[in-house]
Amino acid sequence: MPNKTEMGNRIIPYQMLLNSMSTTHELIDKILPDSGLPSLRIGLEEVLSVVRKDIEKAREGLPIVGYHFAFQPEYLKCFDCVPICIEGVSFFLGALLLSGVETYYDLIGNWGHPFHTCSAQKGVMGMSLEDLFKFDAIITPTAPCDSTCASYPFFKLQKKYPLIIADMPFLHEEKSYKYYGEQLKLSLEELGKVIGQEPDFEKMRNALELENDVTKLKMELFDLIKAVPSPIENMFNPISAAATIFISGTSENLSFYQRMLELAKNRYKNKEHHGGEERVRSIWPYMLTFFDISLCEWLDRELGMSILLDIFNYNLSDLIDTKSDSDTLFYGMAKKAMGWPMVKQSSEFYYPFLDDCIRMAKDFSADCFIYTQSIACKQFGAVPQLLREALHDEVGIPMLIIDFDVGDARMTSLKAFKDKITMFVQTLM
Image (cartoon, rainbow, N blue to C red; front, top):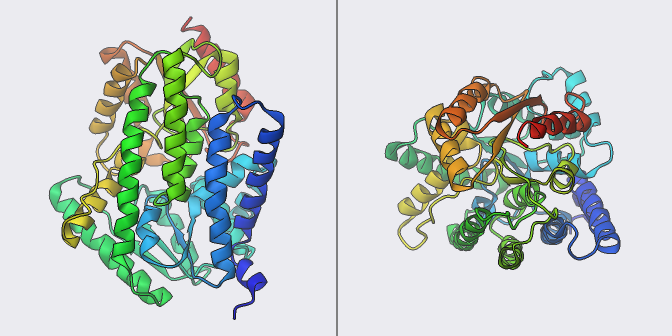
């Protein structure tokens, strides 16, 4: 029998995550009324349920498998393992802990990793230097960016963790989906050999069917968000990103979207806005401030600004055909994965991105765009000005550009964000 304490110590940051989520949920439950931050309350409940189960699985000795957020967690349902999203841990702890995870950014920086790479990976890299994580294997695609491809070898070369890589092609064509489908299957089979398990693709198929149901709910929800005022609060955006990253392929994810859809329907019928009055409808085509998600509530309450969509929420995929043969199944998985948030935008030419943004601006009656240019996302460095011009020419709306580090508040502080957006909104009124 494994020593449960020793086995649990392989994922100490997950225990930190459990404690911080539990504390946050308790504060919300005891201090705020039922109408206060319902998406955060509901999201924490569902994610907490899954994290508790994962910690117990770790204590039972199941293998710890790290994965990049671009490698959907429901694919790992073919194994009895504890899936740990590298980027999710960094950003969710950064959002919930008072001092964020800056200590771990500095640890990996002092070790020699470049400061201008993505803080999404740097947090767990720093934690690994302290042996807070002990992975049995890590799996990632070659996407969405060079920062990812340059950072993940650290786990293999420095920590000696087996690293499985699924090669994702650049072009978004039928031959690419076939190729990446083969890569997904081969990578899962290779992972199975590393952790000593035969992949059970029927279990994975069941998880994919559940996610098909989630996709249907998302589509209905985003139709409601087109309404004026938007019936969903800004906090939904980072929480739904957390749900996608942490609990995809679980009944908890389905429950989260069922509950959020019911909430949105009630607000839609009553023409209610979470902040009281919707004055500005914004789309954030890139990322939110994961180092402090309280900005979402501040925008709702103080400026009456709705965040209708951000990069982790507006890509809706086709349903995966789970009833046909395995080739069809993996083809559908590949097509969904290559259209995944940030993967799609970062792994193809910028024209489709501009087209998507113009379409969304019209469909969702946006008043403006706010583009957050992350220091790590160099593949997007030339896009903001092109998008600003396209929105001006095609839709007639402005765009604010803010440079920042998505996980580290020391580059552009929350105060700086508030000041920039406040001045920008004054030009809209």
